[in-house]
Image 1: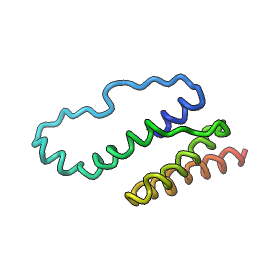
Image 2: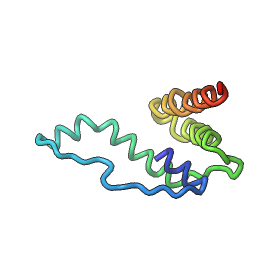
Image 3: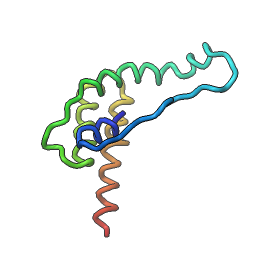
Image 4: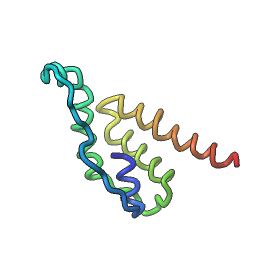
Length: 106
């Protein structure tokens, strides 16, 4: 969702396919939901967040956009669940730092 939002903001044509998740294993569906409940709760917060997120016009590169998304995630979702703060800091911001290092080294 994060990168789809970024590329949409930048005006790139990206299509997504079906399905994102395909369950073909046999087993107890209720037990499966029980195991995945925490992730489902995070998705319940993530989807409306990305539907309403507006990136600033000043964000003109992927790196700019990812930093803006990380900032918004921390501000709007971080207080409700530390997983969002961790995703913003340890994943999004770190990705931008690593990407910048790789590209600046030649």
